Length: 240
Image (tube, rainbow, N blue to C red; front, side, top):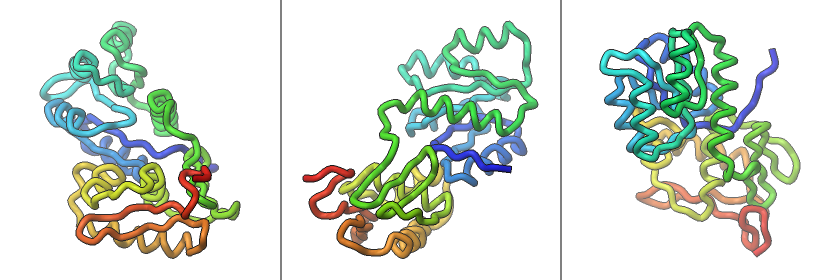
C-alpha cells in the first residue's frame, strides 16, 4: 500500500484509553511527528499552556472532565489551535455541541487511523498558513508535503526522525538551539531518554548531507546545542 506523506506535526493527544493512545502515538511518531499524550484533562490543560501545537486531539469522556469543556476553556483563553474531538458518542446533538464550543472537527470511534491522520493533516495545514512550503538553504531543499530532501536536485534518504530534525534546524537557520529545546519541539515533552540522542542524529545528518560550498553546516555550540549555518552568501534560498 502506498504511503501518504505530510509535513511534520506536533500533536497534543488527550485520550484516557491507554491502548488507543499508544496506537495513535506510535502511528504519528513513526512518520517523524511529535506527540504529547495526556490521560487527564488537567494534564492536557497544562501541556496546552506550556507548549505550542499544530493540532489538539481531545477525547470527550474523561475521568476528570470532558473535551467539550476543555475546548471551550482554551478558546476563551485565546488558544485557537485546531481541535479535533474524538469520542464514542455519535449523537447529532453531541456533534453540534462540539462545534459550538469551538472544535474544528469531530471523529466518532471506532475510526480508521488513515482517516484520523488525514483529518489531522488537514487541520494542521489550516492552522499553519504562514509556514513556508519548502525549506531551503543553499543547494539543500526540504519539501514537507512530499517528504523529499534534495541536495543540488539529487534526492537523499533520511529517516522520519532525521527529516523532522533537519526541518526544524532549517526553519531556525542561524539560531542557536539548545538540546532541551530540540527535544521538546522535535521529540516530545515527556521524552525521558538521554538528550545526547540528538548528537547521534546530527552525526547521521552531517554524513548524509556531505560537504560543499553550497551545503549548510550543522555546527556544534559547545555546552549548548546546535546551529545550522547557511552557505556564505545565501540564506533560505536568497542571495545576500
